[in-house]
Length: 115
Length: 109
Image (cartoon, rainbow over all chains, first blue to last red):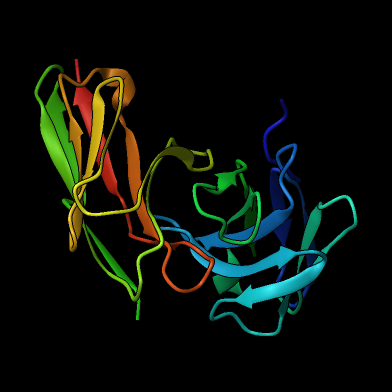
């Protein structure tokens, strides 16, 4: 049973560039959430996708956008990269957007470094 | 506003030395408190979900408990392989998880 898979594992970009990160949810899951984890901090919620729509958004600027595809996979796009965007980006999947007894399961993340 | 505070920030234990990690929370309408384990360079690994005060869950050397204001993760006779960062998160009225900053546990052989 494949868990949550993310690609790429590492990425180096320069300021002002754009980046796309990808996520395939755990088999049977239909909801994908994205988190940003800075070094030494807990993950911070970016947004959640369910039925191909953004259902909820955290306190992140519009430079952060996403998409969910019919097969439930998802992309996170970040435009106009800033040095402060350097972090581990985590994707989590679950069955239903907040269904009881359904924890979110995380992938191993994409480490994004901005030079 | 949802708030999660974990203590201590870091904990060093001798192998076999039991201890507890604390997670204090403030949330409007708790819809679950979650414990995760995170190893360096990896994503968080789900451990437990707790929903109501008085609830307890156990897995091997770990036991999680919940009150109306805090949760404890008790580690009994830890082994070096228990070394990791332990994250606590709450789900309130929103569907997302709100995380604390974690407790970095080191178990020395």
